[in-house]
Image (cartoon, rainbow, N blue to C red; front, side, top):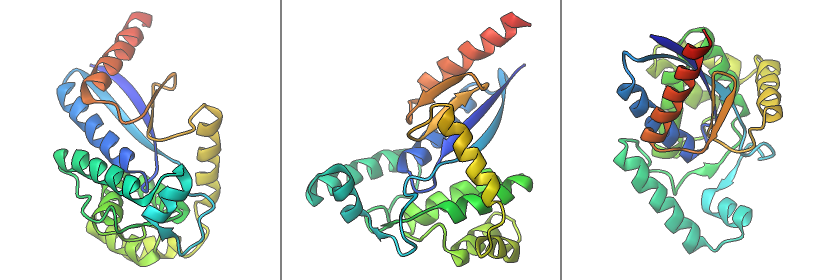
Length: 218
């Protein structure tokens, strides 16, 4: 069985990252027994300069894209429909606030050392898009850490400290220099970048192609 590493550059505040992961999961189901994938999440901040209190999501999107509120709400409803088809909980998507996610990424970096990063990523997607909670709130991080079998006290303590800050910043810089300017970004085997939440069949074809190239180089 061919082995392949995927670095998934993502932000828990990015709806297409949640959708992209779910489509990747579909692709990996198709490839089960064919390709052994190591998935490594990498941090990205959509709202790097956002103050702690954040701002209402529609207000933020209108300002960011220069569109009116009705247009942006319709766009969000369309994203919610795509997410729902994939079994994602996006019921709070329109009520959420735009938040900075640096503290969430720091706790996720710790979760990776416990081999629980993917479950915590998914729990934070649900917290943000399903429950309209701030994913960098120490109490939310504590709650979601406990929900995936991690120590809640440790998660909250990390969120209230600066632990893993250097690691997160270094990873962000590394992948920005590698050409990732928007998320999700899938980097296959450290060589190929696929941008955006591509359909599962596109990911299947890409993964097979890279795995075949690897096999031919051996």
